[in-house]
Image (cartoon, rainbow, N blue to C red; front, side, top):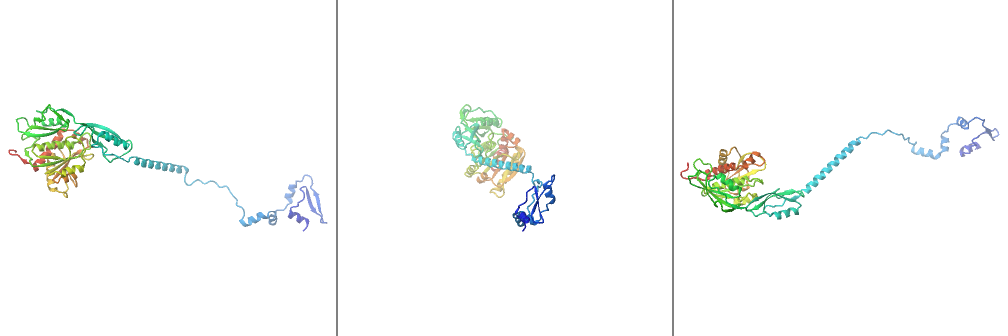
Length: 435
């Protein structure tokens, strides 16, 4: 190996400013570059390109790496691709999801809050009722103080009904007894029966009627017991003696109902302003008792308290040996007008009940107006009476025309007279000399 080869392999190159040549004698000669000549340009022009052996010899480690892994990757910048789903759409979906979760949480929270059952307050002293509600986080509001035979400050009715779920801080409205009012018996002698009953009814007196032959105009009040001026209390019974009716009278008919027991069920109206089933029941009872019939009611008629629930009324009806049972009721919503309900054929006494209901519908249509008919597959109180029965729906509290009639005492009297006429015609007996 000559010196030139050694220099190539081991990197012993001549000085930048010299160009070494080998003479014929084998000794290198140093050649001085002429002035003006760039060493780089000379090397660039004369230096041959590197071949594979020179590359390997120059950097053997890199050659081995390239042989094993392949040539190095050429990383190129690529343009950014737009996302498949726009960012604004993702944000909007996230917002909607958040709103939905929030609404669901609020709904669950509200449902959990409305979890306080309303306690039963009817028949309880107002102070006790207030304490019971306060213990549950509820409030009490008195909407009316009504004279009643119940003790003073006794809760007569409540809204909402017991068991209704409320939220903390909600109010329960109640009607409270103002106690038994003491006052002088009004003078109604000489008044017509309709007017006298209106005056006494507003005082909370329980009016009953008996007929007596007289030369006075029919339905004129001849006497009252207690007499005018005597001290009476709310809920007391007042017996009015009225002139016996003539043939054209529509108040009392010439029927004898001795031995007939009528069970009357005035269902609670669930209305703090009026209890029309109870008012009509009072009027019907007076007419039946004036004809010597017996009346049993499933609710106390001395006041307008709506205390008796259906099971309690059914128990009272079952404890009575009734000849016939009559029910009065209203509904919160429904069609306007009177509806006469007869029992379904599958129920006991269906045939006798159908005959009674047909007569009731006919007399109501003649005395009051348009009447609708229907059937009931069940009526707990009426069936419990064990007698033929008829249920009269007096109207709906959601209908203005019905509510207007409920405050008309003349309308209530017309319904009671028509009911009396139908019952007496089926179960009573005409008196001697009657047409």
